[in-house]
Each structure stands twice: as C-alpha cells, then as structure tokens.
Image (tube, rainbow, N blue to C red; front, side):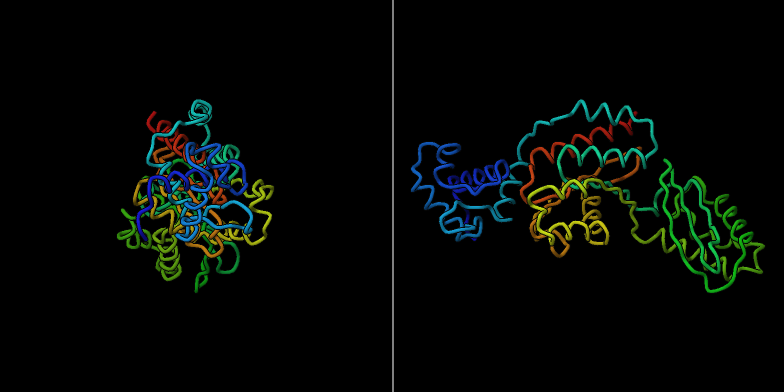
Length: 339
C-alpha cells in the first residue's frame, strides 16, 4: 500500500478523534468545520472516498459519514504514542499507590479497580514467571484420596496454588515432612536455583514414600516452570453499560480472554520481554472475537516484582487518557518499589 499524504493523515486523525469523542460517523462538513479549515467539504469528501478504498474508513450507510477501521486506529495510536502526553490524575494516582501499606495482592487489586474506574475499560494486572521469583513458603496439603493442593507463597506475599493427583498413596504426615524439607532448602531462593538438587535433599530418609514424594516434587516443578501468571482484573461488569458492548459477541470475547488466560498470557509475555508499551488493535489481538476491541499493555514493578498492567476495551477507547493512566500507574508503582 502506498504512502498516505499529510492531508490524508490529518483527515484520518480527525475522523478517529471525532468518533472517539462523539460516537458518530464523521462527515466532510464536520471535518472542515472542526479540524481542517481552509479546504472545501468536496475536497475532504474526495479524500475520504480515497481513504475508504485504501481500507482506513467505511460507511455504515451510503448517506452517512465515515467510521474508522482498525487500520485508521493504528495510524491514530501511532501518532498518540509518538508525541509527548500530559498525564492526568497524576497526583491522585501517586497518592493512592504511595500511601498503600497493603501486600502486593491487595495493591494490584486496588490498582485494577482504579484503572477501570478512570478509563471505563477492563483493567488487568499480571505477575508472571514463578520460576524466578523468591519463594517464601510452600505447603503440600492432602485434600482426600491422592489429591494434593500446593500453596506457594512468594516474596511480597503473593500466593499461587495448584492441585494435582498422585499415582500412589501418600499420607498427610509425609507431605507435611516433605513440605518442611522443601522450605528448609528453598525458602528465600527461587525455584530455578534449587530444583536441580532438591530431589536428593528432600527425599533423603523418605524411602517408604519416595515414589509419591518424587511425583509431588515433579508436579510442583511442572507448575512452577511452566509460564504461569497470577491474574487480577476489574471492570468487566461496568463495561456492560457501554454501547459497544451491547452486542453479546463482543462482551463474550472479552470474558473469554479473561477466563482462558493463555492468549492473554502470550501477549503479556511479549510485553514483559520487550519492556515497552504495547497496543494491539482489532485483529492484532490473538483471540478470536477481539476484532472490535483493543488492548494496551505496559510493564511495571510493584513491590520490586516484574508485572504487566493492561486495559481492554473497544477500538473506540480514549487512547490518550488510557495510555496516560497506565503510564502514571506504572511510574507510581516503580516509585513505590524504589522507596
């Protein structure tokens, strides 16, 4: 596709901005009156027709103005991220985060509530990579039969859990002793540091139940070394009131993304590795049904732990405000970690 002209760029930005602010298709007269003065409506109309052929606009009705496609939103978002942004609500956000004395789980729940309230989007906060996080405590609890619940508490108080079934019988006292040995060796270290020598240390003297204990450690290792995440989210209920989400398939796509987690986890991993703001628009999202939605992700460090913050909403979201809120929250969390 060929390069668009400066005039066409101005028209794209104007149409997207107008639709974000009003929710109405933008006609040539509106563009001339509010955004690009000095040109005739006919000139603008001809340019808009060309841009429609290039895939930037579409007309819901033959007599209406134009609406932006995901391609037009991409041009607009790239323009927003390329220029300096004013950060609204900065002091309020900093005050709330820096004044918090709660543990990391409560802090991240509070942060998602705050971001959802300020943006009218679904807000997520995700703490990834259990394998390299410092372990505070691990409990292996017999739940009945051969079912075992593993509770893993990380530095900062973040709790993860996993349930698995052992192929052999094991009693509660043996699991308790195994937990004690694991904690003696692994407490204060990451799983990646201790897992290679843990088997020999933890199983010494437990020969009667060695197979079950070995399987329990193997299941624990599987859970901790797979790319796991702790998810926090807020705002799913409040977006039901937005006009965009009156279509059932659109709200289902967002709920599926939050429930399935794996597609979201892949995007989060990309953001975590790039350590930069990422914005996925429409079909750039990796989940079926998200063609009409957008996702913004940014890395953060709450309580010195690597995390990713995100907002999920309609393509017609207020990108300037949403990006500003995410950046302000991420900066405040970094500042909180540095105190």
